Each structure stands twice: as structure tokens, then as C-alpha cells.
Image 1: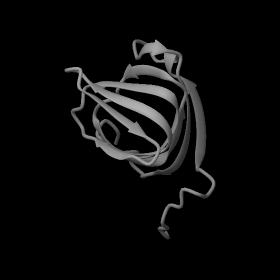
Image 2: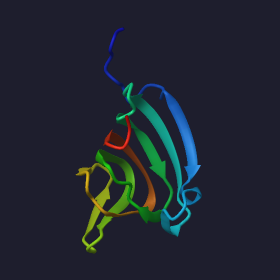
Image 3: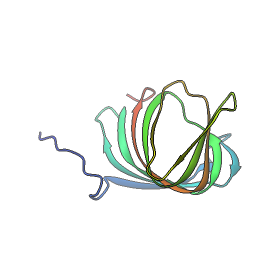
Image 4: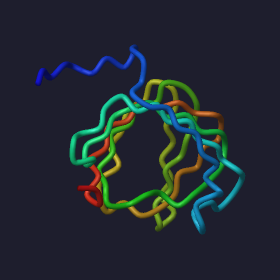
Length: 122
């Protein structure tokens, strides 16, 4: 089996759409809709990479993962449980470490590239 470098400009392996409000108790404000273009998933499902777009809204951040993000376009806030707010805009990159508890707050439609190590998978 050959292994190739993942090119984010190519066609995604899979495209999914969801209304986040369909996940019980997740959304805090708004009605965010997500489109996810998966570029890579490891055989055990624990390592993921892709491109994600969300409309405005605020929700509880997912846990049990490390996530690297690069904001392609838009404006988001990550709000920790203690109220500490960090703003990220087009061109910014950041890591959300496993153990972060708080919220995503998408202020304007945002697209990001992401790489996730999912500890709940596999």
C-alpha cells in the first residue's frame, strides 16, 4: 500500500453537512450549520484532517481531542469556562489542547483547515 501526502487543494474524501442543533444540548446560541470536507482519516479513526465551514453560532466545544486550526476566512472566538476569550481571524493558527472546556463562538461564517487527534476514537 502506498502512502501519499494529503493535498488540501484536491477533492475531499467525503463531504458532510449538519445542523449542529441536531446534537442534543450542544448549541448555546444561534443555529450553526457545518460543512466538513474530510481530507484524511487514519485507519483507526483517531487522526483526522480536513476543511470545515460554519455559519454563526455558539456551542460547547468538543472534548477528548487535540486540534490544530488554521482560519482560512472568518472570525471566531474560543471562550474558556472561566470566561477567558481568544479571538481568531483569517490567517490565524492555533491549537486547542485536550482538556479545553469552553465554547466555540463563530461571529461570522468561518472556514478552517483542521487536524485532530481524537482520543475517543479507535
